[in-house]
Length: 94
Image (cartoon, rainbow, N blue to C red; front, side):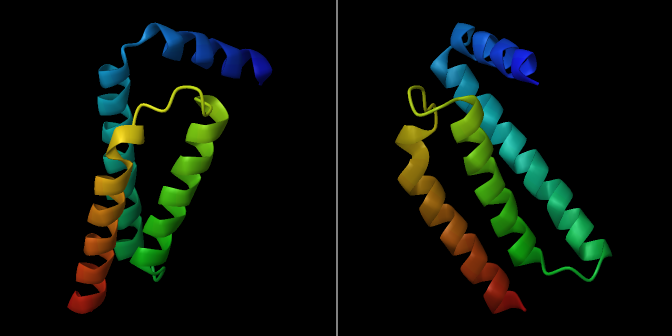
């Protein structure tokens, strides 16, 4: 397990910051779409699952990338505001 994490860290250090930010945003959006589809097909609440994905994503980002290199740091506030708007929209629609 540690060799896999060290390999991932070595690959992340070789990637440009903007490229890494785009990749991470793509992974986050793809994972959110999958979780949304799962929640629609099951009786699980969609907002709770999406919040869990966000928290899990933050934990994995801190474990793998660490606090030394945070590619989405500049987008933190806009992403938080966008997530809150989307949650309010989903709550209002139900």
